[in-house]
Length: 175
Image (cartoon, rainbow, N blue to C red; front, side):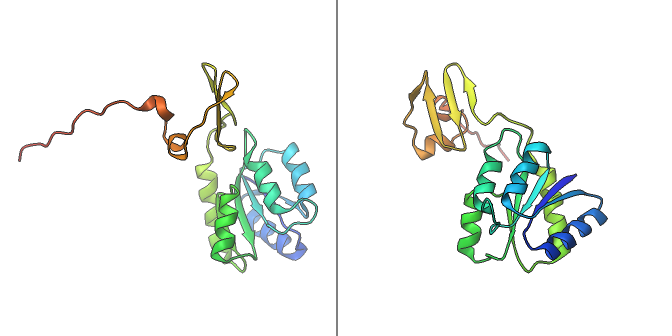
């Protein structure tokens, strides 16, 4: 498993990387958002452990960059911003998990392993079929280049409006 630790606090980044390496993971460190973005362009990571308050490129912007990629890493935000509102906004940016500092190291390891197991197969960012383009990240849909005004409910429904087919009645089994 390949992990990028994007953390500007040198001692914390070094301790986390050393501990993850002891767990058999290949770990790179980026000390700011610019370095993290450069490493992400070069290497394919399974998980990015991301501090929100990075210099260079802010962790929030970096999270959005990561989640907009076709082949993306899973993102675990590891940050001092630990209020419920912070967690909601971080997860809303596309983070796959959120852990507030201070943290228990074995929990970090388990969360990273869980994210690596859940990593989706590579999917194109924009889905195209029969003149229809669907961009789940931007929540937009077009047909032959014209925007489709889908409601939130239609957008979230698997298969969208075309999937509406009557269901067969459910029959009760006799006892």
